[in-house]
Structures are given as C-alpha cells and as structure tokens.
Amino acid sequence: MLAKLPAFGRGARRVVARSALCAALLPGCGGGGGGGVTAPPPPAGPPAPVTIVVDEGSRSLSSRFITWHGFLTTRPGELRVTVDWTSPGNNLDVFLARGACDPDQLDAGVCIVMGTAESPTAKPETIVVPDAVQGLFTLFVVNLGATTETFSYRATVTYTPAATTEPGLMR
Image (cartoon, rainbow, N blue to C red; front, side, top):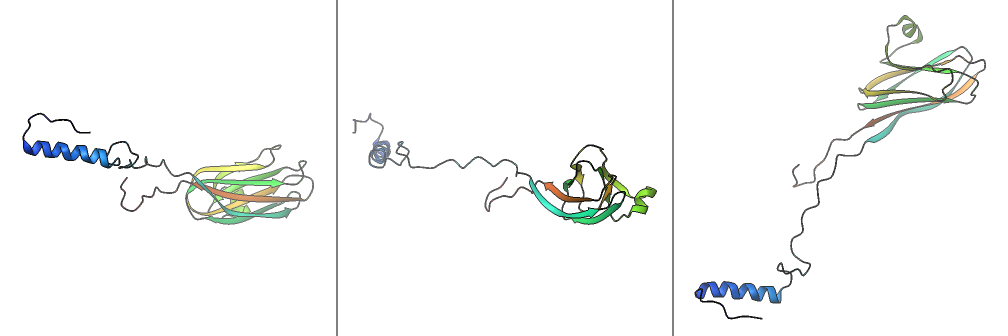
C-alpha cells in the first residue's frame, strides 16, 4: 500500500517507493519474514579437560616385599596414580618418584619423591600430583600385610587441550 509522499523531490520519491516495494514483495528484506542475516554463535567456552590412561596393570606381591615399575607420561597435567588390592586386611603403601629410581635409592633418599600414600586403613591408595611434567616416573608398592597380595594400578593424566579456532575465525 502506497501513500502520497510529501514533496521531497523526484530522487527521494524513487528511493522511498523502491524501499516500500521491497518490503511489500520480499518479506526477507528485514520485514520479519524469518530470513535475513543471523548473528554468529557465541564463542565457545574453554576446552573441557581430557583424562588419558598412561599406564595400568596388576601384580602379585609377597608379604613384606616391595615392587617398582617405571612408566612414561606424554604430556604435562594432573597425574593420578591409584593402587587397589584384594584383601582389606592387608596394608599396601605407595610411593611415586620422578625419573628412574630403585628401592635402594628410595631408601637412601636420593629419589625425587612426588607423593606418598601410606594410610594403614585407606583402600585404595591414591597419589595426585597436580602439575606433573611429562616424562619418566617410578611407582613403588610395599606390602606391609601378613599375606601375599594381588594389586592393580592405574596412572592417568588430566590436561586441558589448547583452544583451537575454526578456519577464518579469530579469537
């Protein structure tokens, strides 16, 4: 529907007439017809943390003996080592050292000990190193119980991946 325009001059009348025609014939021209330009999605939040298993296994350990095992981590992050065993009547203690280490070195105090779990009642035992670097670690398990024990261990690293951008977008 067109109304008579005030006297603006010939060029202004054409612009207004074309705009009115576009709005009437093409609802997608900003007339609320559902078309048009949509806003880009809001930027994503930080990436979610990722947990990877770096080592796991099981062993049998005689009473009053110690065993040790080296493993590698491939990235820095929170290192969590959990040791669980069969009999609640046995007490297993856990030590974690940075780098290569053996029981004699551990006993002499020359290993870089990152954590210990020595509770007489906790089962499982867990060591958490919040900001572990990547590299070699040595896990020690000591059976202070009265009988041979079977235990399992699991080492994980939790890290936050670097933020990525989509091609053509800048953050």
